[in-house]
Image (tube, rainbow, N blue to C red; front, side, top):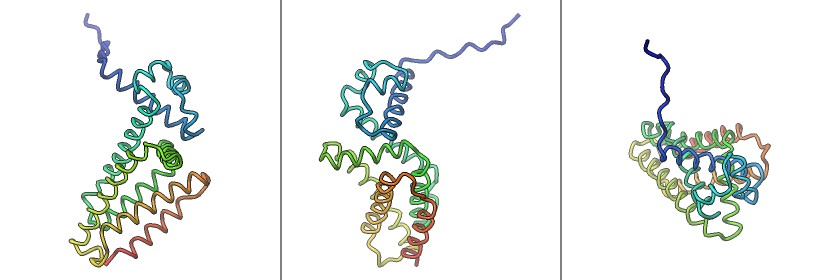
Length: 207
């Protein structure tokens, strides 16, 4: 008689490593979002994720290495959220508005995004070397927004008189400012701000 039980697939060492790193980074993000950067010690991260302190050291080497890995993870999450909106299939104006909408919608729901901006605030306040990876990530977002604006101008849906680079920087600064304000006032209701921001930007940019 043939058994109908399915033998579970053996996970590779690479699979196990990727899972443990993801769980450690998620634990670090949760601690930072809830209690601040100081709470993200290797011991606390290991305890929350269910691993040893030694594994955190083995995976990331140092607090600097951990934070750089966490920044990369959080930035990848944000990029994935934007990709889910399929902004490249929209005209330039709707792509810019979709970018803003996705960012503000996820900002109010995603605790790991909060951790990203807690880290950013700390890096700026401490004049830390961690400002460099943040600057690189934000430059990438600015360039993406600028490309959307240029596309919208070519399509005739965004006013040609606007400077595309300045528009991208302004939109990025709006999102950064709201993210910082949410750290100061976690109870802030983002929904009317999201709606107002979209209406204001549409009115300002549309032909």
